[in-house]
Length: 373
Image (cartoon, rainbow, N blue to C red):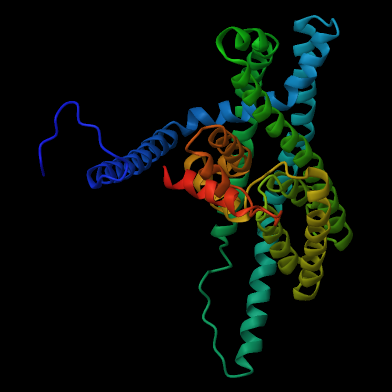
């Protein structure tokens, strides 16, 4: 290759210019990939610290509009923040106390369920033996250690949740105090366009969380009523589980249905388990039909991205990461959408566009933006 002078300027069609641009593009892709890996490793290591902060941040995002609204109407900031905290504590108590009681009840009944399951396995072995099929037991159901471990893990998770809520509420209190003066701070350090981007992202997340909370509450109530009516034990637990897991789009309700249907199979038999499963399916279909009308395009993510984000954030941050995977990915998508050269990534994260008579020139412009990355 010929040496280049210090004042050498390449023509866009010069092969050397094209080669340099290709190398720069490859280097940028490698740099982005390495950055993602390093950031992911840091998040994984800092998960015990990040989880309470993230939960507090989302609670504060939902509560802050109320606090700001009260302050704008002359309510003292301390009283406004205390009102928001009181609302958060009431909501947490309404969720935490019934959940703890339901987990305790389920734990007490585990030996009874194990005995039922052991009897059903014996009947299954006898029935198969009548057809000349021998079924060797994989688990010793007379000592149901797996069910006891499940109940113990549920109890420990509930206790850990209650203990961390104290720290979460403390962080929420400080965030709410800061939220009242956040607009003045941003006005001094950010441009109007940046403030608009932040406000838009916060509004989208707030709208999504409020709408999702309403739909999750409706889902939990319907599941509770259905399980109670069909005679499934501890219906409060399955209703609360459906409420919590409904925050995971697409697959949350499928995960929530599995333990309730399993208990119905053990407690009531295969026929009633199918009825319970049909009820869960009907609830999911009904909520799936109503939810898009209530939430509109608040999520703005494709189904595949939602599933992958749940897996990735769940691996990085644990169960809480799976619950908040959708709003976290929404924030990332919103950030990419407002960065020149990265907007194509935001488009990839979003749902498939509806046919809208897009011109060939517009499609070419989008392709050109992607090719420049």
